[in-house]
Length: 140
Image 1 (spheres, helix red, strand yellow):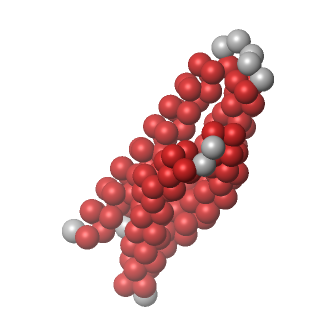
Image 2: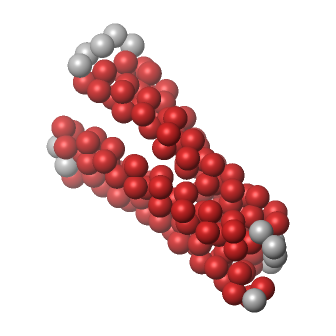
């Protein structure tokens, strides 16, 4: 049973790591380079709710699988899950509001959007690093 739980943890962390790299390193930049600005932002913005929910689910599955066999990895995966939830329910609504305010030309909205986008990107990068830590620890 331990081998199955370790495999589930590995697969969850691997899928999430690869998916996050593909989304942040390929899909989002490609959308902004290939689509007109007025379509790229809403397109990528529309993906984020699912990105956060799927990320939460996958990291939670990995954490549950690891809880009895690899507690440090389980804790790390819970932090990843909490990062997705925080981003989904706290950062994203504020970022969308700032994006829309920026598009309406409200004073200070562009700076607020840029700050929130940096925060979301920072959280995402920390999550990717944490997943890499899990994958390295699981391999060792």
